[in-house]
Amino acid sequence: MEIGSAVITTFFVTYGLELLAVLGAVGLAFGLALSGTLQNFAGGVMILLFKPYKVGDFIEA
Image 1: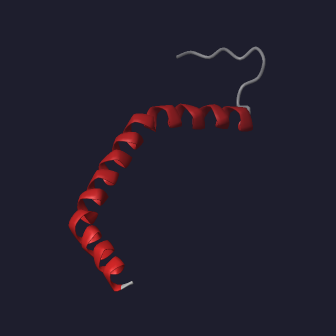
Image 2: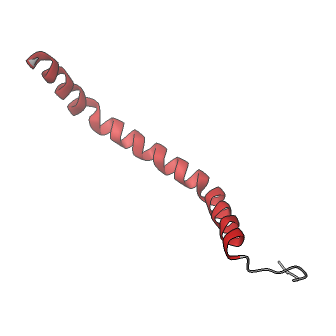
Image 3: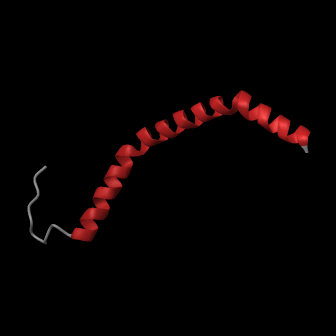
């Protein structure tokens, strides 16, 4: 039991910060990649929920 905990502790001390840094970088990359998609999705949901437009409204972009 003590050997196993020593191995696990050594592993996390050695590779823990590297793993944490890699996971943080991956999370940041996914967040930046999906930000536009999530903004468009949220905007579409808000339009469906609040229904700010009526039939016949003219929308300029």
